[in-house]
Image 1 (cartoon, rainbow, N blue to C red):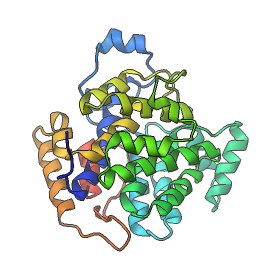
Image 2 (spheres, rainbow, N blue to C red):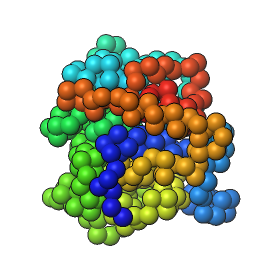
Image 3 (tube, one colour):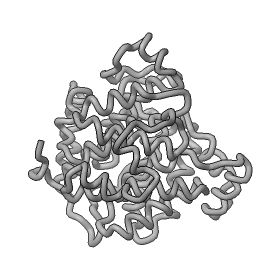
Image 4 (cartoon, one colour):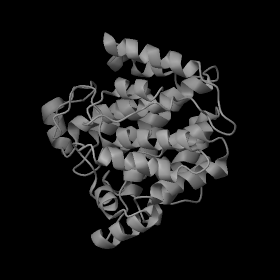
Length: 327
């Protein structure tokens, strides 16, 4: 299928919707084994909620909410967004979210005015920090900046705010360079090959990784790349990746792969099956109109409205979150 006629605005919206849709789909099976998923759901294709977090259908988790923090922070101060992103991280943290990863929780608790120091101290406290949390939230960087070097630099910066391990920073940079290529109209397979060549991730394009899809950032990205390479049908890619969830993977492969595919599609076609029902459908169409009316800033793909604010609880449905973000 050719996507050359898809506008930049639709590609950006597709990426953002992909975050929330994949998150709402996979959140249901978090901490479940593959056997448990098969026994309870068979082949999970619908956003049904429930799970360990007792989600409402369409309710998103920490991954989507932190993605919105990154997007908002960039829009507020694109030249140097760290402080603005951090302000939104802490506001969300203080809202008593249902779920938050251990590494990020420790970094927030350790924060005392210096984000990189907080990440280092969290690493020292826990003895590790190579989780996939910063990878889950990094996509807005590729959607906001047009220059590849800047995308790489900002991807690493937002990662280092909470994850000291360099493997996290490298993964975010690689992932967003692929996303930027797709955003600019390149085909999926050449983009994957170009960015993984000479890296530990290249083998994931040829064969299934020899590891479980865990919360370790390297395992996460390897499986996401494998699913992207070998499962091109949009809906099936998201659903199969959800089914692969194991005990600790935290929506990793499913969401990371699904949202990149959506950079190449119109969000209405991608999300309609789950969101185009009643009020949700109207919100999606309202979001389409809001984004279509925006004009890009110099050097920044500015297709959100800087009006998002956090409620006392993290209880936004996927479509509500992006309407508030002006997706």
